[in-house]
Image 1 (cartoon, rainbow, N blue to C red):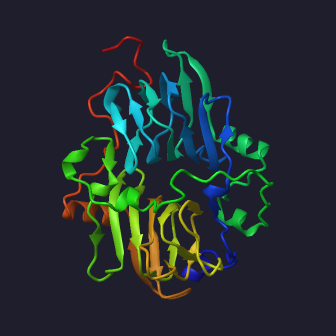
Image 2 (cartoon, one colour):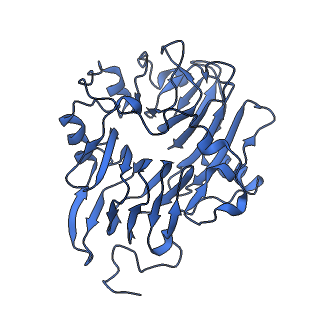
Length: 354
Protein backbone atom coordinates (compact mmCIF):
# COMPACT_ATOMS: atom_id res chain seq x y z
CA UNK A 1 0.00 0.00 0.00
CA UNK A 2 2.88 2.41 0.69
CA UNK A 3 3.70 2.55 -3.03
CA UNK A 4 0.27 4.05 -3.64
CA UNK A 5 0.89 7.20 -1.57
CA UNK A 6 2.36 9.09 -4.51
CA UNK A 7 3.24 6.71 -7.36
CA UNK A 8 3.81 9.53 -9.86
CA UNK A 9 6.12 11.60 -7.65
CA UNK A 10 9.53 11.29 -9.26
CA UNK A 11 11.07 14.76 -9.61
CA UNK A 12 14.78 15.30 -10.04
CA UNK A 13 17.24 17.74 -8.58
CA UNK A 14 16.55 20.32 -5.93
CA UNK A 15 12.79 20.45 -6.39
CA UNK A 16 12.17 21.78 -2.88
CA UNK A 17 15.25 23.86 -2.15
CA UNK A 18 16.93 27.22 -2.66
CA UNK A 19 20.47 28.46 -2.10
CA UNK A 20 19.93 31.48 0.13
CA UNK A 21 23.43 32.77 -0.72
CA UNK A 22 22.17 33.39 -4.27
CA UNK A 23 19.22 35.55 -3.19
CA UNK A 24 19.09 39.33 -2.80
CA UNK A 25 17.69 41.15 0.20
CA UNK A 26 14.11 42.27 -0.39
CA UNK A 27 12.55 45.21 1.45
CA UNK A 28 8.81 45.25 2.17
CA UNK A 29 6.93 48.44 2.96
CA UNK A 30 4.85 46.67 5.61
CA UNK A 31 7.98 45.79 7.64
CA UNK A 32 10.03 49.00 7.85
CA UNK A 33 13.73 48.42 8.41
CA UNK A 34 13.46 44.65 7.84
CA UNK A 35 15.01 42.86 4.86
CA UNK A 36 14.10 39.39 3.62
CA UNK A 37 15.45 36.54 1.54
CA UNK A 38 12.06 34.97 0.65
CA UNK A 39 11.94 31.17 0.80
CA UNK A 40 8.35 29.91 0.97
CA UNK A 41 4.83 31.32 1.24
CA UNK A 42 1.68 29.25 1.68
CA UNK A 43 -1.62 30.49 0.29
CA UNK A 44 -3.38 27.69 2.21
CA UNK A 45 -2.06 28.07 5.76
CA UNK A 46 -0.58 31.57 5.71
CA UNK A 47 2.80 30.25 6.86
CA UNK A 48 5.93 31.80 5.36
CA UNK A 49 9.68 31.31 5.75
CA UNK A 50 12.58 33.68 5.14
CA UNK A 51 16.06 34.69 6.14
CA UNK A 52 15.59 38.08 7.85
CA UNK A 53 18.15 40.85 8.22
CA UNK A 54 18.04 43.83 10.56
CA UNK A 55 20.89 46.32 10.28
CA UNK A 56 22.51 47.66 13.43
CA UNK A 57 20.24 50.14 15.20
CA UNK A 58 17.00 49.06 13.54
CA UNK A 59 14.29 48.86 16.20
CA UNK A 60 10.60 47.99 16.30
CA UNK A 61 8.30 49.06 19.12
CA UNK A 62 5.55 46.42 19.31
CA UNK A 63 5.15 43.30 17.19
CA UNK A 64 1.95 41.30 17.54
CA UNK A 65 2.41 37.71 16.41
CA UNK A 66 -1.00 36.59 15.15
CA UNK A 67 0.66 33.27 14.44
CA UNK A 68 3.65 31.70 16.16
CA UNK A 69 7.26 32.09 14.96
CA UNK A 70 10.50 30.17 15.42
CA UNK A 71 13.93 31.59 14.68
CA UNK A 72 17.64 30.76 14.71
CA UNK A 73 20.14 33.60 14.98
CA UNK A 74 22.78 33.12 12.27
CA UNK A 75 24.87 36.23 12.93
CA UNK A 76 24.74 39.44 14.96
CA UNK A 77 22.70 40.17 18.09
CA UNK A 78 19.06 41.01 18.84
CA UNK A 79 17.82 42.62 22.04
CA UNK A 80 14.27 41.96 23.24
CA UNK A 81 13.49 44.92 25.45
CA UNK A 82 10.77 43.60 27.77
CA UNK A 83 8.24 40.91 28.59
CA UNK A 84 8.79 37.14 28.65
CA UNK A 85 11.31 37.35 25.79
CA UNK A 86 13.48 40.02 27.46
CA UNK A 87 17.20 39.58 26.86
CA UNK A 88 19.84 39.60 24.14
CA UNK A 89 20.34 36.66 21.80
CA UNK A 90 23.20 35.96 19.42
CA UNK A 91 24.52 33.33 17.00
CA UNK A 92 23.35 29.78 17.68
CA UNK A 93 20.36 30.83 19.79
CA UNK A 94 17.05 29.26 18.74
CA UNK A 95 13.68 30.42 20.00
CA UNK A 96 9.93 30.11 19.71
CA UNK A 97 7.39 32.91 20.01
CA UNK A 98 3.83 31.61 20.62
CA UNK A 99 0.80 32.93 18.77
CA UNK A 100 -0.99 36.01 20.17
CA UNK A 101 2.19 37.32 21.80
CA UNK A 102 3.11 40.97 21.56
CA UNK A 103 6.86 41.59 21.59
CA UNK A 104 7.29 44.79 23.56
CA UNK A 105 10.37 45.98 21.70
CA UNK A 106 13.09 44.61 19.44
CA UNK A 107 16.43 46.16 18.47
CA UNK A 108 19.38 44.98 16.38
CA UNK A 109 22.49 45.54 18.50
CA UNK A 110 24.60 44.56 15.47
CA UNK A 111 23.81 43.74 11.86
CA UNK A 112 21.77 40.57 12.43
CA UNK A 113 20.60 37.75 10.17
CA UNK A 114 18.25 35.00 11.31
CA UNK A 115 16.25 32.13 9.87
CA UNK A 116 12.54 32.59 10.62
CA UNK A 117 9.43 30.52 10.12
CA UNK A 118 6.27 32.59 10.54
CA UNK A 119 3.20 30.43 11.22
CA UNK A 120 0.90 33.39 10.58
CA UNK A 121 0.86 37.17 10.08
CA UNK A 122 2.73 39.72 12.18
CA UNK A 123 1.20 43.10 13.01
CA UNK A 124 3.48 46.13 13.43
CA UNK A 125 1.98 48.31 16.17
CA UNK A 126 2.44 51.87 17.34
CA UNK A 127 3.37 52.62 20.94
CA UNK A 128 -0.37 52.92 21.60
CA UNK A 129 -0.87 49.46 20.00
CA UNK A 130 -2.64 50.75 16.93
CA UNK A 131 -2.00 48.54 13.89
CA UNK A 132 0.38 50.27 11.50
CA UNK A 133 0.83 47.41 9.02
CA UNK A 134 0.57 43.65 8.58
CA UNK A 135 3.28 41.29 7.34
CA UNK A 136 1.73 38.23 5.69
CA UNK A 137 2.67 35.35 3.41
CA UNK A 138 1.27 37.28 0.47
CA UNK A 139 3.52 40.25 1.19
CA UNK A 140 6.50 37.92 1.01
CA UNK A 141 5.14 36.38 -2.21
CA UNK A 142 4.66 39.80 -3.79
CA UNK A 143 8.15 40.86 -2.77
CA UNK A 144 9.59 37.71 -4.33
CA UNK A 145 7.59 38.25 -7.52
CA UNK A 146 8.76 41.86 -7.78
CA UNK A 147 12.38 40.69 -7.68
CA UNK A 148 11.94 37.68 -9.96
CA UNK A 149 12.52 35.17 -7.15
CA UNK A 150 10.88 31.74 -7.47
CA UNK A 151 9.76 30.42 -4.07
CA UNK A 152 9.96 26.72 -3.24
CA UNK A 153 6.90 24.55 -4.00
CA UNK A 154 4.36 23.84 -1.24
CA UNK A 155 2.90 20.52 -2.44
CA UNK A 156 3.80 17.35 -4.29
CA UNK A 157 1.73 18.52 -7.25
CA UNK A 158 3.67 21.78 -7.42
CA UNK A 159 6.94 19.87 -7.28
CA UNK A 160 5.87 17.96 -10.39
CA UNK A 161 5.45 21.13 -12.43
CA UNK A 162 8.35 22.69 -14.36
CA UNK A 163 9.96 25.14 -12.00
CA UNK A 164 10.21 28.69 -13.29
CA UNK A 165 13.75 29.99 -13.33
CA UNK A 166 14.43 32.92 -11.06
CA UNK A 167 15.30 36.14 -12.82
CA UNK A 168 18.91 37.28 -12.71
CA UNK A 169 19.30 39.03 -9.38
CA UNK A 170 22.32 40.26 -7.44
CA UNK A 171 23.38 37.39 -5.21
CA UNK A 172 24.26 38.45 -1.67
CA UNK A 173 25.75 35.65 0.48
CA UNK A 174 24.81 35.23 4.12
CA UNK A 175 27.21 36.65 6.68
CA UNK A 176 28.02 33.06 7.73
CA UNK A 177 28.80 31.95 4.16
CA UNK A 178 32.60 32.03 4.57
CA UNK A 179 33.47 30.15 7.77
CA UNK A 180 31.89 26.92 8.93
CA UNK A 181 28.31 27.71 9.88
CA UNK A 182 28.24 24.42 11.79
CA UNK A 183 30.00 26.18 14.65
CA UNK A 184 26.67 27.91 15.35
CA UNK A 185 25.32 24.71 16.87
CA UNK A 186 28.28 22.34 17.21
CA UNK A 187 30.71 24.07 19.59
CA UNK A 188 30.04 23.01 23.18
CA UNK A 189 29.03 25.93 25.37
CA UNK A 190 28.83 26.01 29.15
CA UNK A 191 25.28 25.18 30.22
CA UNK A 192 25.16 28.22 32.51
CA UNK A 193 26.08 30.65 29.73
CA UNK A 194 22.51 31.14 28.60
CA UNK A 195 19.27 30.29 30.41
CA UNK A 196 15.88 31.38 29.04
CA UNK A 197 12.47 29.66 28.88
CA UNK A 198 11.79 30.72 25.28
CA UNK A 199 15.29 30.63 23.77
CA UNK A 200 18.03 28.02 23.90
CA UNK A 201 21.74 28.03 23.07
CA UNK A 202 21.88 25.12 20.64
CA UNK A 203 25.59 24.62 21.38
CA UNK A 204 24.82 23.67 24.97
CA UNK A 205 22.44 20.87 24.01
CA UNK A 206 24.06 17.41 23.88
CA UNK A 207 23.83 15.27 20.79
CA UNK A 208 21.38 12.40 21.24
CA UNK A 209 22.74 9.30 19.55
CA UNK A 210 20.91 5.99 19.24
CA UNK A 211 23.48 3.15 19.54
CA UNK A 212 21.76 1.40 16.64
CA UNK A 213 22.22 4.54 14.47
CA UNK A 214 25.65 5.87 15.51
CA UNK A 215 26.01 8.13 12.47
CA UNK A 216 22.90 10.17 13.28
CA UNK A 217 22.81 12.73 16.11
CA UNK A 218 19.92 14.92 17.23
CA UNK A 219 19.54 18.05 19.32
CA UNK A 220 15.85 18.33 20.24
CA UNK A 221 14.77 21.98 20.65
CA UNK A 222 10.97 22.01 20.85
CA UNK A 223 8.15 19.49 20.68
CA UNK A 224 4.48 20.40 20.37
CA UNK A 225 2.09 17.81 21.71
CA UNK A 226 -0.73 19.92 20.26
CA UNK A 227 0.38 20.07 16.62
CA UNK A 228 2.96 17.27 16.44
CA UNK A 229 5.65 19.69 15.22
CA UNK A 230 9.23 19.02 16.36
CA UNK A 231 12.22 21.33 15.93
CA UNK A 232 15.68 19.78 15.79
CA UNK A 233 19.33 20.14 14.87
CA UNK A 234 20.52 17.05 12.98
CA UNK A 235 24.06 15.69 12.57
CA UNK A 236 23.68 13.34 9.62
CA UNK A 237 26.86 11.42 8.78
CA UNK A 238 25.27 8.16 7.72
CA UNK A 239 22.58 7.18 5.26
CA UNK A 240 18.87 7.64 5.97
CA UNK A 241 17.17 4.71 4.30
CA UNK A 242 13.95 4.76 2.24
CA UNK A 243 11.29 6.93 3.84
CA UNK A 244 8.13 8.96 3.29
CA UNK A 245 7.54 12.39 4.77
CA UNK A 246 3.96 11.82 5.95
CA UNK A 247 4.11 15.41 7.17
CA UNK A 248 6.13 18.24 5.66
CA UNK A 249 9.62 19.27 6.85
CA UNK A 250 12.03 22.14 6.24
CA UNK A 251 15.74 22.41 6.94
CA UNK A 252 18.75 24.69 6.45
CA UNK A 253 22.18 23.17 5.81
CA UNK A 254 24.73 24.67 8.22
CA UNK A 255 27.77 22.46 7.68
CA UNK A 256 28.95 19.87 5.18
CA UNK A 257 27.09 18.77 2.06
CA UNK A 258 23.94 16.71 1.62
CA UNK A 259 23.31 14.27 -1.22
CA UNK A 260 19.79 14.79 -2.43
CA UNK A 261 17.98 12.94 -5.22
CA UNK A 262 19.46 13.68 -8.63
CA UNK A 263 21.39 16.70 -7.44
CA UNK A 264 25.04 17.46 -8.22
CA UNK A 265 27.73 14.99 -7.16
CA UNK A 266 29.14 17.54 -4.70
CA UNK A 267 25.76 17.80 -2.95
CA UNK A 268 24.27 20.94 -1.47
CA UNK A 269 26.16 22.96 1.13
CA UNK A 270 25.74 25.62 3.82
CA UNK A 271 22.99 28.14 3.21
CA UNK A 272 20.76 25.84 1.15
CA UNK A 273 17.22 25.73 2.55
CA UNK A 274 14.83 22.90 1.72
CA UNK A 275 11.11 22.31 2.07
CA UNK A 276 9.84 18.74 1.83
CA UNK A 277 6.10 18.70 1.10
CA UNK A 278 3.91 16.16 2.82
CA UNK A 279 4.14 12.85 0.96
CA UNK A 280 7.66 13.37 -0.42
CA UNK A 281 9.71 10.19 -0.67
CA UNK A 282 13.47 9.61 -0.52
CA UNK A 283 15.13 6.30 -1.28
CA UNK A 284 18.27 7.57 0.45
CA UNK A 285 19.55 10.82 1.96
CA UNK A 286 23.20 11.04 2.97
CA UNK A 287 26.27 13.12 3.64
CA UNK A 288 28.54 13.84 0.68
CA UNK A 289 32.24 13.53 1.55
CA UNK A 290 33.97 12.07 4.59
CA UNK A 291 35.74 15.06 6.14
CA UNK A 292 32.94 17.27 7.47
CA UNK A 293 29.91 16.63 9.62
CA UNK A 294 26.66 17.23 7.78
CA UNK A 295 24.61 19.43 10.12
CA UNK A 296 21.27 21.04 9.43
CA UNK A 297 18.28 22.55 11.19
CA UNK A 298 14.96 20.71 10.88
CA UNK A 299 11.34 21.55 11.51
CA UNK A 300 9.41 18.29 11.20
CA UNK A 301 5.69 18.93 10.78
CA UNK A 302 4.52 15.32 10.91
CA UNK A 303 5.65 11.68 11.09
CA UNK A 304 8.33 10.08 8.91
CA UNK A 305 7.73 6.50 7.78
CA UNK A 306 10.71 4.21 7.12
CA UNK A 307 10.62 1.07 4.97
CA UNK A 308 12.90 -0.98 2.68
CA UNK A 309 11.51 0.40 -0.58
CA UNK A 310 8.22 1.09 -2.35
CA UNK A 311 5.64 -1.54 -1.50
CA UNK A 312 7.63 -3.06 1.38
CA UNK A 313 6.36 -3.31 4.98
CA UNK A 314 6.77 -0.33 7.30
CA UNK A 315 9.87 -0.63 9.52
CA UNK A 316 9.31 2.36 11.78
CA UNK A 317 7.42 5.62 12.16
CA UNK A 318 9.24 8.55 13.75
CA UNK A 319 7.08 11.26 15.29
CA UNK A 320 7.03 13.89 18.03
CA UNK A 321 6.54 11.12 20.59
CA UNK A 322 9.98 9.62 19.95
CA UNK A 323 11.63 13.06 19.98
CA UNK A 324 9.94 13.95 23.27
CA UNK A 325 10.94 10.59 24.77
CA UNK A 326 14.57 11.08 23.72
CA UNK A 327 14.72 14.60 25.17
CA UNK A 328 13.31 13.35 28.46
CA UNK A 329 15.77 10.46 28.61
CA UNK A 330 18.72 12.84 28.11
CA UNK A 331 17.43 15.46 30.56
CA UNK A 332 16.99 18.12 27.88
CA UNK A 333 14.69 20.99 28.83
CA UNK A 334 12.72 21.89 25.73
CA UNK A 335 11.81 25.42 24.69
CA UNK A 336 8.40 26.41 26.08
CA UNK A 337 5.39 26.40 23.76
CA UNK A 338 3.48 29.12 25.63
CA UNK A 339 4.01 32.13 27.87
CA UNK A 340 3.14 30.84 31.32
CA UNK A 341 0.87 32.93 33.60
CA UNK A 342 1.24 36.08 31.54
CA UNK A 343 -1.46 38.39 30.23
CA UNK A 344 0.35 41.69 29.84
CA UNK A 345 1.59 40.96 26.34
CA UNK A 346 -1.28 38.96 24.89
CA UNK A 347 -3.21 40.31 21.92
CA UNK A 348 -6.37 40.93 23.89
CA UNK A 349 -4.71 42.68 26.85
CA UNK A 350 -5.88 46.28 27.28
CA UNK A 351 -3.36 49.10 27.00
CA UNK A 352 -1.61 49.69 30.28
CA UNK A 353 -2.54 46.34 31.84
CA UNK A 354 -0.10 45.08 34.42
